[in-house]
Image 1 (spheres, protein in one colour):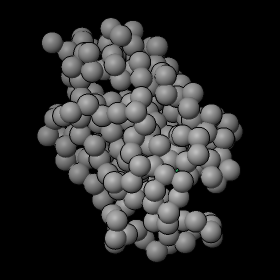
Image 2 (cartoon, protein in one colour):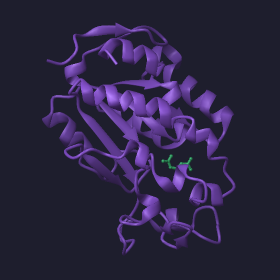
Image 3 (cartoon, helix red, strand yellow):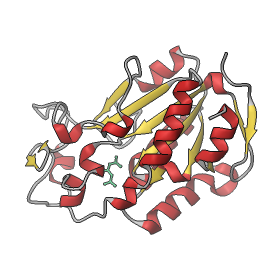
Length: 225
Ligand code: TIU
């Protein structure tokens, strides 16, 4: 039996968690974004800002699995022939090394390459759906919505990286499709502390315009972790 429904302390107000209808959606915890020596660090980013989310995510994931609830993972990346890579995304940033080029952990953001894979600490278990997404939002050009609907999911706990880019875009997409989204702040990370702060404030502003913000310990209390 899934844990009983309860109210999770959150901002801007309590989140009425219905575990049987709630999926844990872990966004883009990929080696190229998080590991020293990966693409993120190559661009000059401080990966420690993202790595602090690994341990809280690991605990939340373990509790979610132990409760028998739905876990889903996403990975940002493209087909090896880059046919799903918009030319605008390929050239954005005017970098010397861009998506599809050879980076420190294989071809950058290309499916099947080492850097594209999920970090070992949070590796998907057999049976946990993995969504390969070409965009920042997890609903764009994927079957995420269909899978959630088939499982009767109405709520999402959204974690992962980065707070202001793929997490925020996904929460907004989910909100427009009728899902209630709860974001544990210690389980999401940004390379930029000010974007971490603002990314979370944007979600919970105006009475929870896109969703709710809490901490992983509050969610663990509700699911018995
Ligand atoms: N997953 C995700 O957020 N992809 C990004 O490109 N994030 C940046 O912050 N650049």
